[in-house]
Amino acid sequence: MNYFLTYTVYVLVLSILMGISTWKLFKKMGYSPLFAFIPFYNYFIILKETKHPKWWAILSYMPIVGPIMMSVFHLYLMKKFGKTLFKDQILTVILPFIYMATVNYSKDTELEDENANDLFLTDEEKSDKKKDTFLGSITFAVVFATIIHVFVTQPFGIPTGSMERTLLVGDFLFVNKWSYGYRLPMRPLAIPFLQGTITDTGEKGNPKDDPKSYVDGVKLPYTRILQFNKPQKNDVVVFNYPRDSVHTAIDRKDPYVKRCVATAGDTFEMRAGRLFVNGKPEVVLGDQEVQHRYIVTTGSQLDIPALYKAYGFLPIQELQQNNGGYLYAFQGLTDKTAKDIKELPQVIDMKEDVSAKGEAAVYYKDELKTKIDTTQSIFPINKPWNADWYGPVRIPKKGDVVAINNETLPMFQWIISEYEHNSLEKKNGKIFINGKETNQYTIQQDYYMMVGDNRDASLDARFFGFVPEENIVGKPMFTWMSLQGAFSDSSSTYQAPFKVRWDRMFKATNTGEANKTSYWWIAAMILILFFGWEYFVKLFRKNKTEDEL
Image 1 (tube, rainbow, N blue to C red):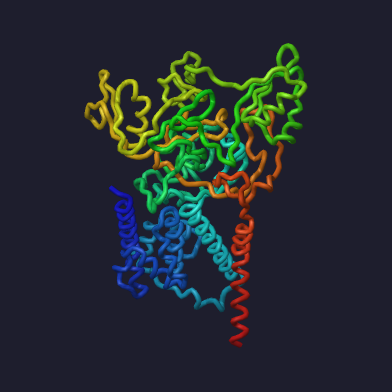
Image 2 (image 1 turned 60 degrees about the vertical axis):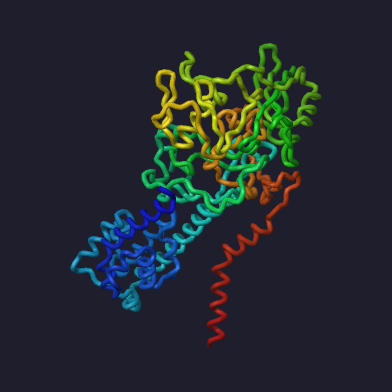
């Protein structure tokens, strides 16, 4: 069932429930009981009768926003019939159609004129009325922010150094969800602003036993609209981690940000830590810096804080040796920084850390090596590849017909069973897709190779495999906040001192230019409009009233 048909079914079901639980109330307000069953128009009438902006009705069935707005509209209706106590409000929100039905079928339910007794309100009742107005303002501020978050742009933080020098740990970005076409929400019933889980309530660091922020049973199929562009080579892209085993909903999987180094149909390869696409060395853009991991042997301890002041934060592992010297593993050193460190008087030896060719990067969860850790192991696990010597491998393209056998199955099994939702079985040395024995498969969507700029410290497509098109979220637009030390680095002996990186704020993130444009003036305008709007509206109304007098 396609997205819009499924969405229509949900709307009709909710409208029938609304009609069954409120038709008598509509009749008492002077309308045909049938109007209670008509989507959007039923809420239009409620807003009209309760003297609220009628255009709000269009928000009633929107994914994620809709449940909030429906609760607000139901409260308005119950208040219209005198149900204003706290217990009435709680029941209306938690059990809307059940509680409204009890009111609907009660013989004692009558309309109540909210303004009739305004002159006789006590100070306490007037205060409660002001609180209702304030809570209403807060609710619609949340709704407005939710609409922006769900349908326009989403904030995203950089917790790791996989994109270092281009995107730094502690950068906070806004992601444009329309860059590659808008992916419609797939779990419409969800808590605003939360990605996958509510909080870490179970085993610490294990999200599998944490409560989800969405209702998994209410689902809509993958659909992307207004797709005029697809990810191109060298685009920095935000996508949902394809191997996320906690969430079945694609749009609720953890968001990652990497550079798209190869698109569908390209051939990707790593040679001694250097990246090649279609047999040619990668094109390094102005905002990228080639960087590598180095092992440094010193006669005495290095002054790491001094290095931080000179070069910024560098993830470093420090180990003191028996002879009094030290061994350092530096992640993400540029050629210039590596040259400067090599010239330090304490340095005895320095060499780039490159894995040996043919050495498979396969890791295990147990000492007996019976369970492979697929999240940390190279993809696919049956190839003698590692992060420095990888491929060549062709990125799957929609329409490709690929051979399926014992050798190729590790490469394509996730595509067949997880990303393209087929049943995949292996029996007696034979492979069955959707119950039929086969030796080939036709790829149903485009895939991409997403790799971090900090190649030696990036858990990317070399480990989790190709990224399906349906997992693409969008492009980062600009950095709105940058805080050094906002996230700790568990792989580093030293941590970055906290500071605000003012020079990175409100700068575009996806231009490929070394000197990026700052958009601070746009941010200032938005803040002025957001916080000053109410003031200007009141001032305009005051001037209008004075002119009329």
